[in-house]
Amino acid sequence: MTIELPEGYKPTKKEDYMSAQHLEYFRQKLLDWRAELLQESDNTISHLKEENWQEPDINDRAHWKPMPRWNYAHAIVTAS
Image 1: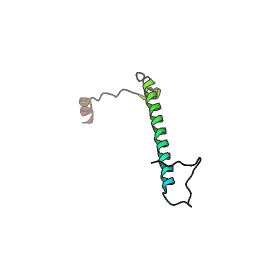
Image 2 (image 1 turned 135 degrees about the horizontal axis):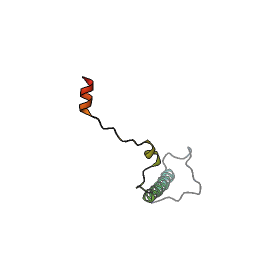
Image 3 (image 1 turned 90 degrees about the vertical axis):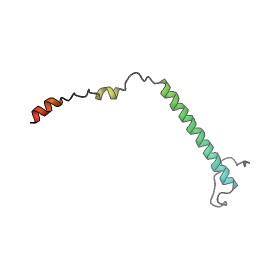
Image 4 (image 1 turned 60 degrees about the vertical axis):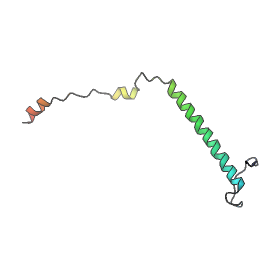
């Protein structure tokens, strides 16, 4: 059972704490927030599907260096 809230209703301290109107107000607020989060999630998923994942990010390419090969035999000889 839902209660019809007046347009622009905001809970006040004068009302009973968590009255039926308070509960409906916060229920609607949570439902609106949920809808907003789901919409943003859909937008993010859509954006990720459109991106070209074959090409590395420009920042990754600028900092990538091959790892040097470590020559253990050389290290043992020079450390002695």
